Length: 152
Image (cartoon, rainbow, N blue to C red):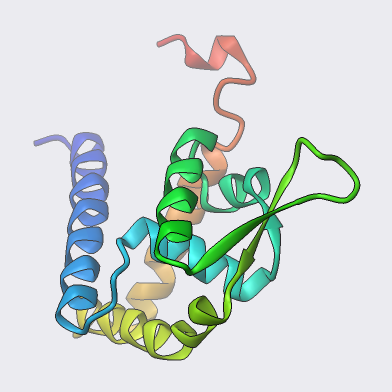
């Protein structure tokens, strides 16, 4: 398999496996969250109250997916929607007390899960891996803004 193809294949496999592994760890430990829901919660824990649009931008998911994640988190009692005082069309997403109660243990599980995933990989290799991923992200950060770049 050519190197360029391997990059795409393994980035996709890694993404899928990490989400599945994290979901299994959460389930085993009684945390009722998917990987994507955790990503939303972690963003809110770190940033505080945010709009749905801000969450979508930060986690790089489309607005419809984020709406679905928030709907499910709201059903679980972990977040609530609050209409913005400045613009009634905007919903602010607020973590509930129940959602805050999950923060420390859930973050610790996520950290331990990632530590197992990267076990045996040197810090130097991890720094290189992160640097390469950042470069790839930068190369495609303006995806869709320049039609000529989309032509192959």
